[in-house]
View 1 (cartoon, protein in one colour):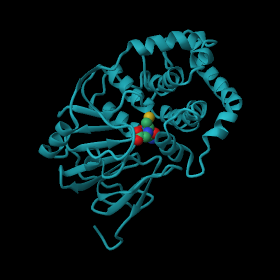
View 2 (spheres, rainbow, N blue to C red):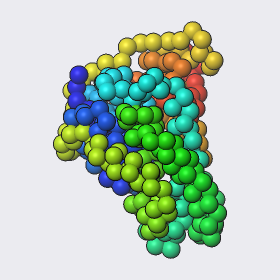
View 3 (cartoon, rainbow, N blue to C red):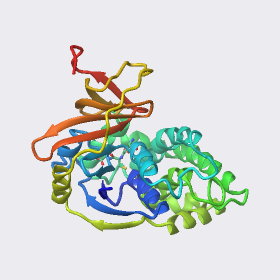
Length: 313
Ligand SMILES: N[C@@H](CCC(=O)N[C@@H](CS)C(=O)NCC(=O)O)C(=O)O
């Protein structure tokens, strides 16, 4: 298998979730540090416009969104599993909580608390991305006591889960729920001045945090963005054609489609021809003059797919 390349930056909490998964699986990977703000001229040839972080690249296959990245890591490197004790399925439902309302609360706290000090360009970008065009970081700042009350109760759910004597969320072995919870705790601790204080009442969570941190990030070695582009250019996608007769939208291999994140931040559509469509994944083929043909993968959940040319592929 061609190597795993992660396009990310150190401060990114969602990247930390993926780095923890790479650690749980003890994988070797190449690390490309990308800018925190668009434009990301050395990433766009790979993704075709998707700008969020992280992105995983394996040869000429590009995986957008941590959901898609983690599922692909489990498929390619199934041991040790992220679903010990048969914990698959429902854990992805838990991710809709951690990556949805709970992540938004953590962002509201971190960005609200820094409303007066964030660089203007960064505040404007993240404000629009996470809270829409009418974002108001000052209003979040005013709302911090409420945000803290919401977070404290939900961190308390993690604490209760661990109070039963488990080392990890599912039991004795680490699994996906640990990565899903850990990255938020990591974000709150590292980026909110009151984070350590907020977390200090949760003694079981603190001990668990140490155990998850000790799993590490696997074995990363640096790679430049240009090397990653050259790797994509020299490779051929490993994704085979797949359609799904039961697809509710009738999506079929060969169709030209546009894919956008289905949330308030939206994003420019990524356009390409469907190679693989299934209940959980969509992969589209596109061409870029710097890298030639690449196949870009998205999760179905959280993304809106629209057909571009009803006349055919
Ligand atoms: N649903 C996406 C969310 C990714 C996300 O929001 N990442 C943040 C960084 S932690 C981001 O993209 N920030 C803007 C940027 O990096 O340009 C995923 O799970 O990968």
